Length: 251
Image (tube, rainbow, N blue to C red; front, side):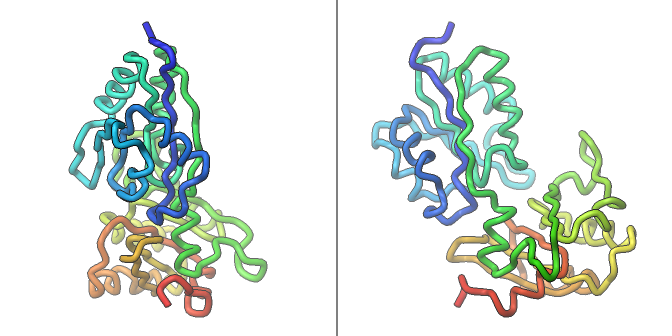
């Protein structure tokens, strides 16, 4: 039994810069009874919610989960069934490698009203903050976004590296820092030229943003030397060359 006016809003908070959350996302926060939020959500965004709003942290890092996904799903159901307006605040966009689809499925199966509030995905915003356009008339007319988490073969559909190596002009890899050597190895094994430009952008859109550029041949060593840490976005393709002339955020 669901008590009105229960509703869950799956809200994208954007990639890190608090200024990139949408107007609608802010409006949802301001009416929330409960906010269930992720690790990469900026603290200043949470201040948009009322002081009386219950705020529950469920952040995940590599191999360190505050709550497993199943428990997060149960938490959303529990709060909604209490008649609460719940905001599930997720970094980036909830439907782009954010498990928002899984959470929406659980809500639908249990008859809980919900709404999706898209956010600015790090797949697009982080390269932009590094001066890297994912498409460019002279260099790229397509891009593909892929998770780096499944690089070592963890369950679910596999990654078709043979197709990725040649199927898109620009490749954007999210959550790939821990598996970077394996990711690069797969691209090279599937005939991506060693001279292909690569950028690794750490803590994108925040004051801590750092970007290292190189090629498939040397990027793993360069990242190690610079001691880049996750979260990071990896961009592979000729558009990386624009970083040198279009970088603006770190100037």
